[in-house]
Image 1 (cartoon, rainbow, N blue to C red):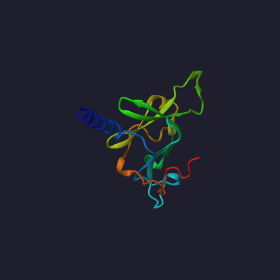
Image 2 (spheres, helix red, strand yellow):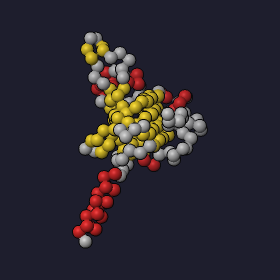
Image 3 (cartoon, rainbow, N blue to C red):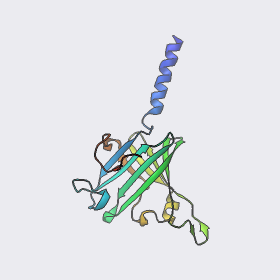
Image 4 (cartoon, rainbow, N blue to C red):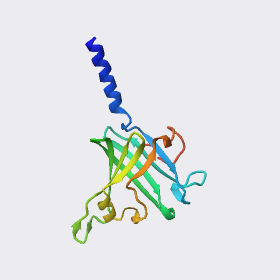
Length: 168
């Protein structure tokens, strides 16, 4: 009997620990009210922001993030993110390299973009001071605090904004 109870508790613990923060391939899209042209424009012509990630290795993910801001400004961050464990669950960390690594003779702290799944959304945060110092997105679009509802996940293999090119 103890073995059955221990097994049930172990399964429940594993299920509770795995959901909802476990990162699986996904593309989360949010419609925006700003008119826009280019890659942030959907097939219907409506502006959209999106975040997509797909696993490359056990700890590395390919990430695409595009956010439409005011005045139709678009900020896009693409690259390889490392999966890290945090007290809140798994988080993807994308280093954004500045155009110039040294400003005024001083090293610039790295701008990091974090992508994490919470119980209700995919959330984006940044090392705000560092990202502002290197003028991420020309200072026109704020990535800090962006949220994409979990219900906005595009079905697998659906035609959409994330990863227009197949995985290598």
